[in-house]
Length: 462
Image (cartoon, rainbow, N blue to C red):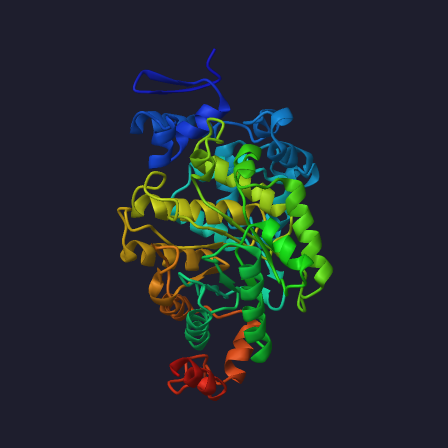
């Protein structure tokens, strides 16, 4: 017997399971078509959304999409669910939950109190029946503040990850990109390098480079080399100056296994970073990246739609109190998010779901060169994320990552978002920019080169 159904124009649309219902209710995206779980028509999608709106939230606690005994992410979600936090919304169905989230009486403190009671599947479900403006409005009410050497996620702030990648990990090239970004007000979220040569010796070398620059100029920020967590653990054992431990995570045990990780390894990495005691403003030491389609690309999605899988990854991230989390939303490619419209929808869904679950969420507003997207699409998504209260975005020289080969957001894009939306950097970093004469009393960039960096520029030119 079908579990769920809805009738449109005398046609009864039937859905055999909660998993199928969630998949068929998902707004269009190429990855779900690739997986064979998408709705066959717009009418079937609407029918699924209407049926989903009537599902009680309690159903998500009683029906696991991936069996409890087979999947440690499912066990994490169920075992850590806070019943007391869930109590105020436990009587709601998905449609009522949407209305409750949009209600003006549901304010920031209220959302913070219920966050631990919301499961990823609940968040994914309600996002599927929301318009873009709904995703923006609710996410804007969710404030998640974290700290390491500065404070991120405060009201009216937008931080940036300075991303000085280089195709050969050349120290001079990396330094030039770092100088460029710092002089354009970028780098308060993290100065983070994706290494071209992913071995421990190179990771240690890059960590020392980043640490030396931060120490020399007394920059209130943190560094990270985005290598596999096992490499970072080995770097810590070798005495490297590790601020943040990075790892890509996914929403199923099998997908995480394809990354070479499990939950115990993430806990080990966090404990190792905490033992170094390098934070001055706080002790959030983890940096996670996610992205819709990662579980499907690993053949580890268990028949779920990719957005629900993505939301489950946020339960993994939430367990380790990260400083930063971001969806690399358009990076996996058009097989999963075909064009700018799908990328925009996915980016706003990811930000909404993560913030609702209590995560300090940012977004790599990006696309690959073979996707049906362009920088105009990224401008639109960047602006909407800025309105939605996104914690941080990427700062890439020229918006073109010459090592990873994809298009993201530039240092100038971050300046645009801050200026047009009235946003500012993290407070400690903002004060540093003024102290170094990079910005003036109004927070605008000085036209003259900051004196402290004149010698550095001459060395790079030489």
